[in-house]
Image 1 (cartoon, helix red, strand yellow):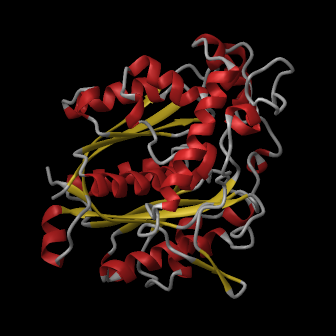
Image 2 (cartoon, helix red, strand yellow):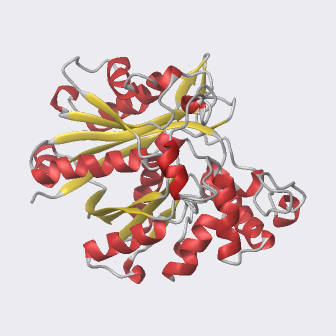
Length: 381
């Protein structure tokens, strides 16, 4: 089996709702990162075997295979195919897994993986504005089944005994770490500036400097009257895209490319669809087992901050080192552009690994319906 490597990882800034990127079509925002791969590697787009693109709300501006229209918007040859995948919030992480699997199997040589979501233009849930996606047989199987992930987050907080104060302290940490990372330029090399109306959007917009647990304590619960989940300890509604160039180690060497990371293992797990957001726990265990690694071998963990209870419950069950968890902040501070988030997190993680000489990194993402991806990569060089 061939070795798959990530040659380049780039992302747009993550824009806040109705912020700097809100007027950009998803295909055009995707084209920005596809173009950056070419500019930064010398990639000949005609050599790309496939583009695998994540997107969650596949309606309106994001309907009809947005990945394909991203390829055309980027000016790439018409011969370059693309597909759009949906594994809820893990869509672009799944795109990376599919890309690596294609390369490792020998079926494809060069694959671009990534994803996009412009939530300002295609709001969460808009693609299911009519109808009932779960169907009566699923609803018969599970009591209290809900579309609302906030309710699931409340349930996780109760089950793991996580207090409002703990959640708010963790959320303030996310903003503090993200601000520190932004200030020291940790994101500069990975970000693709996006031109909008004659100006350039160059930085993540969601960071709220000076956020404290005391300030967050003043916010009202969002989902239940006596609950602990609110806007400040939940991920932000965001706009963004990211792309990863994946190929074999041999092909990268032949092109004169120096990869960032080697794909080690990927796993997908299912969990209780009512709790919904606990899938990262079994997915992490499966990925570690596949890789033959222990939790202590991993130098950095990116666990998507859909809601603060998700990484904290994961931390409790896995016994991971808390200092290695989301060291650059997470979706609470930096935003969560759904279909783009998997690739955004991987981009942040591999750059962090290179800058800090960390051998292994593990990324995991909770997903609607109770599934999760976990992916392990190893630093090259």
